[in-house]
Length: 484
Ligand code: UDP
Image 1: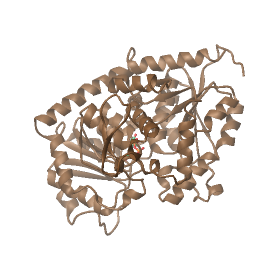
Image 2: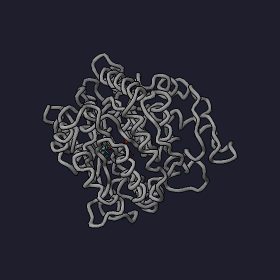
Image 3: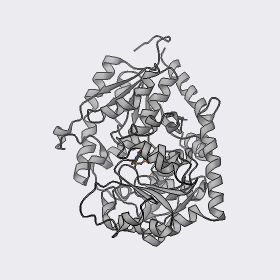
Image 4: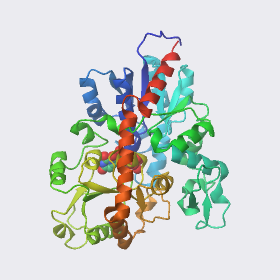
């Protein structure tokens, strides 16, 4: 379809239904809107109220940002009504149904594209069919992977060369082939779905999402060049992907409200109360522990975390995805009483960015989800790495070996978000040791100063003249030029 070059550039943003994907894509839509682009976000009824809240401040500033709500086909696949976010699909069977439901969204996307005729579709990697839909309407499809250049390169190399299949056991060490530096991993740290021929809804989706990459126009990455320059170049030159980095996107949120309850979920703890608590603490004295939106540990693992934190003697904010109950097996006897004033347990959803940015936070125990990493980097906080699933074991290597702003707690085994429920693989001693290492001593100071330097670079990258700002301008100009 031919469009007029003076028309305002209009982009559709279509995030996968999981907080780790929708939070950064909402931020991206806001960023593009603040640069004069008409941004339309697509989501489903359950997620819509939070999306609306999240874009409210941009709307009030007069930016063109809209929301379109499509139906999530829970009934067609036999999911309970309202199961419209990946974190609500808690069993393997539900996850499979969830993946299948997402493939049924295609006709609705086509319908709204037909009605609105945007100039570009920025869709999540988990919607591989979006490339064909965009082609049907003659517009470019951009991919959002939800992760950075280093893990993108590492996973492409692992898929291409299959080093984990060339070792004799899962505990044997191998290095990632054709990679800019030597990174050692074991087979047990590689996603299980890469080691099996069993076909599932997820493996089908994963393969399709890889297959559509070369047919798509390009990739938008939530990262900044100075964080991973070698891997940004490698991704573009060696893997030949057209990519623009425009992050850290979370830095677009300036108001307390934007950093708090509007990010992903309603916060379970009043943000002002949280800030008051942090205000009473010394700079760099508090450890923040949170494992993202998908990971739910077993009671024995939570029990070990509690004892490890207590043994470290540090003050902490610990986010636990558990509701208050009469009998709580995961809490050591008398724990809450003993930690009164020293430790804060947030049950449910925490205002993570707000917490990380507070000067009292001195360390972050993270599962190495890409958003958490970038939010930690943007706040200048050293990290304790506790990877669980997805590409998180690659991300750990970036933090501990390349950037050297993290200390590993020592996890060896990749797990699905469901399998993780089985045992306490990390013991209290390892937790205590890692917390102490990151919080006290000369080495801790060195880690902290590297983290602070990166924080500065992150902030500069998104300012006018910075690397992310330039890439953002470049992609907007390129998309504008394609309209004629
Ligand atoms: N998050 C939050 N509060 C929580 C848990 C997570 O605000 O209690 C946000 C976090 O700031 C990040 C996102 O949810 O933006 C999680 O994304 P990440 O890539 O770190 O992990 P995932 O949830 O995808 O495993």
